[in-house]
Image (tube, rainbow, N blue to C red; front, side):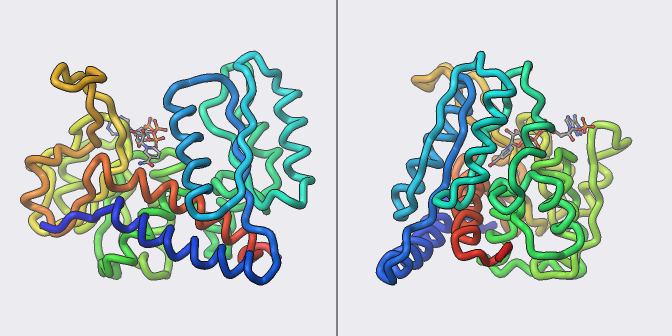
Length: 293
Ligand code: NDP
């Protein structure tokens, strides 16, 4: 069994990006600039946004964090989005989800200029991705693709089973793995809460991508010998031996599943770090106008 080391890989890719940024700056141009909008003070969202901003700084990107209180109105947020769409000095931006209940996430997503949508959530990017056109890919699936590519994992002709069908992870992942591309060219089964027998589907999988948010859901009896297992889940479980009183685990029962795998991602230290790296990569694409000229 080999670990798909998201920590090591993300450092490697970020170093490459830092090199590219210093070339951009040396040539007299401004560095890439990512903005992030955070509404409210949800601790997980605050942590994720701050880590994105910190990562920008590390590789020479400019970053702007716009923090608004939880009672910010939808109209005010749409006004901020309108300004971000218009600012030439900002290449891409994200609006951290979830938003407070009184704000319609769909309306907010649609208001984002798809040419600055570095989260890859806008339907224009989603549609272009599905058609194999250049697009900002959603960060988590994009991070997973980079991981498969860099570890030179052959996906062609393989059976990939994705667990979970969210718009940000499972569904785009299933599309990308089935596309005529490398990585890709898989036969894909997309499973979800209404799937009759997920274990039976998983036992046929050469590649498993689990993204449901249920600790240790995927167990060893569901995994074929030699399978590649990508664990997207981030779940808190109580652990009194830890200072914080909890630890983070994935959707896969790592201890029992890993001996059967050819490759597996750890949690933490796997997909999560690649997600942030993919967001930065999209911002660099935006700066270089390599997707939309
Ligand atoms: P969502 O909650 O949006 O979607 C969960 C999906 O899992 C749904 O499609 C749901 O099915 C399915 N599901 C839930 N319970 C079951 C079950 N018992 N059996 C089968 N399918 C089930 O989740 P996300 O995609 O946003 O996130 C999934 C996990 O990944 C979470 O732990 C999240 O924290 C993590 N995550 C990690 C990221 C990273 O960077 N590592 C990034 C994004 C998410 P249905 O559609 O039928 O309801």
